[in-house]
Image (cartoon, rainbow, N blue to C red; front, side):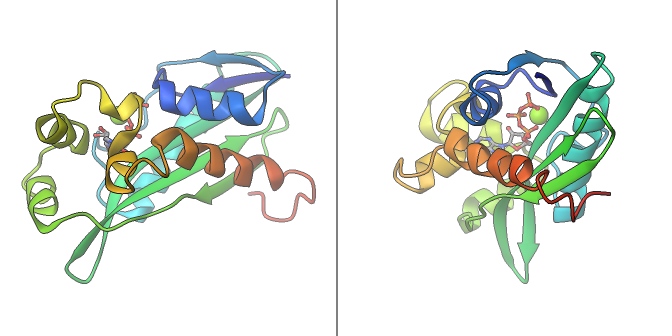
Length: 169
Ligand SMILES: O=P(O)(O)OP(=O)(O)OP(=O)(O)OC[C@H]1O[C@@H](n2cnc3c(O)ncnc32)[C@H](O)[C@@H]1O
Ligand SMILES: [Mg+2]
């Protein structure tokens, strides 16, 4: 089984390895087609779909997986949000969303001013490349759910939908 993941981000690639330990997993630097910091559920979901479709084009007979992080708002609260998409070799598309947690007013303000979450988290924690490791979700859940854990859950939701083939587009 060949899988192309539309990212070199270690948290994302490890999440796919966790679900598919025996697969041949490759990474590709594909375009998400959305802003580097998506700011709504539809935009974040579209980024995941675009990455999955572009990844599937990289190899013959492969699955494409796209994982995208973003933020979304409910009333005046800003949340981390996450989406994933999987395209099968026969071009069936499955989507799933991941965990969301609220962000503090200060972080939300920096995000709405145009800063990327990865950058804000680096300033906050002084940890480089936190987005490839525990991520914001790992920091704000006191390490109970890392970015890899969260994306692993999303990949399970994606892979599990293939069996009954009910919700594909
Ligand atoms: O190389 P890619 O795959 O793009 O990996 P990325 O870490 O940039 O991940 P996304 O593009 O999916 O994330 C969109 C933005 O949200 C940020 N982000 C999302 N979740 C995060 C987290 O848990 N920790 C830190 N930054 C996060 C990230 O830095 C981006 O600015
Ligand atoms: Mg990115």
